[in-house]
Image (cartoon, rainbow, N blue to C red; front, side):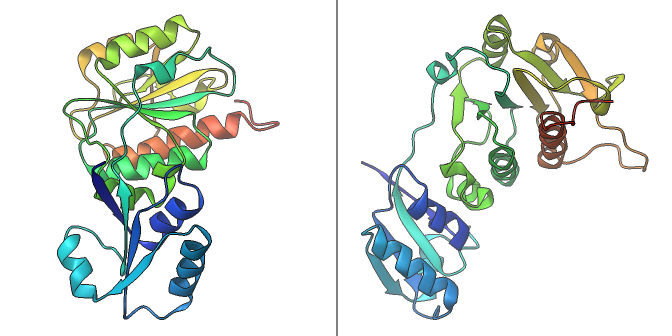
Amino acid sequence: MSENYIGGFHAVMAALEDGAVKPFEILLSDSRQDERARRLLAAANAAAVPVRQVSKSDIDMRAPELRHQGVLALIPERELLGEDALEAPASPERIFLALDGVQDPHNLGACLRTAEAVGATAVIIPKDRAAGLSPVVLKAAAGAAERVPLIAVTNLTRTLEQLKERGYWVTGLAGEATESLFDVDLTGPLVLVMGAEGAGMRRLTRETCDRLVKIPMLGKTESLNVSVAAAVCLYEAFRQRQPGGKRR
C-alpha cells in the first residue's frame, strides 16, 4: 500500500481519533515539548500508533510545502469515492457540495472543512482538471477530510442530472443570477454547485442547475473566494434547516 502524509496538529489528531485508517507512524519534532505535543503523544499511545521524535529539519525535508507545526503522520494513500457513493435515495436532510473544477488545494481543503462543520453529506469534485486529495488539502481541511466523504466523478454534468432524477434540487452560485441566495428555499434534498476560481461554472454545469442564485454584496468587491462563497451558501442552507430558520 502506498503512503501519503498529513501535517499539523488538527489534521493528525483527527486521523488518530476519527480516521477510518490510522497512521502508520507519526514524526514529531524533538523541539515540541508543549501541551499539544503531550496530548498528541497520549492519543497516539491510545491508538497504538508509533511516534518517532526527529529534528524539525527532517520534517521540513519530507514535507517542504506544508506548515506542519512540527508534526507529520504517515498514512495510507486514501482513494476517492466514486459515483456509486451517490446512489442512496434522496432524503430531506442531505446536502451535497459540488465543486466544478476548483484547482487550489487550499480552497478545496477549506470547502471540506465548512462542509464537515455543517454536516454536509459529501463533497463532489470532477476527476480531471480539479484539485484532489493531497497533503496541502489535508492540512487545509484541518481534519475534516477524515470526516466528510470526497466523491470524484467522471462527468459532473451527468452526475448532477442523476441527482436531479433522484429528487435533489440543484442550485448553482453565479454572479449573473437574479435571485438572491437569501430569498430561495434551501431545505430538502439539495446540491449546491460552486464554480472554479476565476472562471466560475462551466456552461453545461450552469445549464444543468435547476436555479442560479447570487450572494448579495454591498461593497465594491465583484466576487468572493470560492471557499468563502461555499461557506456562505452552506451556512444559509444550514440556518434554514434549523427550527424556526426557514426563509422569510
